[in-house]
Length: 172
Image (cartoon, rainbow, N blue to C red; front, side):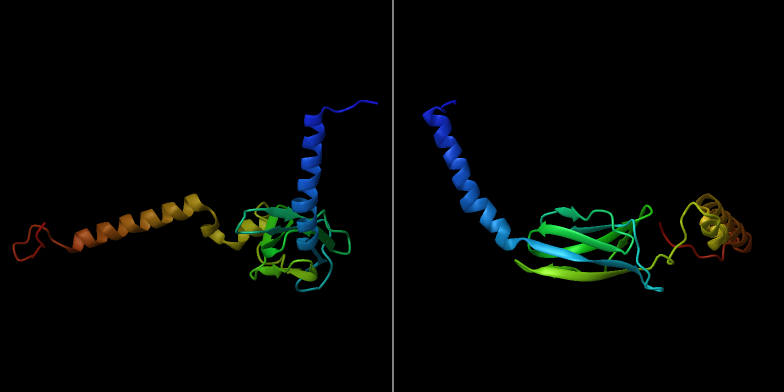
């Protein structure tokens, strides 16, 4: 059996004491559990294969659930007591909950998160391309606006005669 030096034994005792006094009881008392389910808002069907994220805007810490089960259930624990912003991630999309959720020390909270997946079509689908018409293509829309401004400028220039002595211009 190896014997530790007095310095290493003292250090081990100090680390164990610090964890006992400052670390473990504080986290055990303040630890919060968030459980619940993720549902599609219109049909109320469970959403599987999603991840729930809670973020504390004060500290910047983000905690995530494992992937939701087929019944939409999730669990995030333990997390420190705080007021969290909640988001659900699914199919490369992030759905942010409007209202923050306050979790008190020692609380176990259950929440049902409703996701409206019909808000916008997936950017890579034909539905997305056809939904915005010509405005869905940024290059074409920009050219259309610039072309319209150019034509309007020519029309205004043809109506206004800059060589007319009766035309009043503002001083520079």
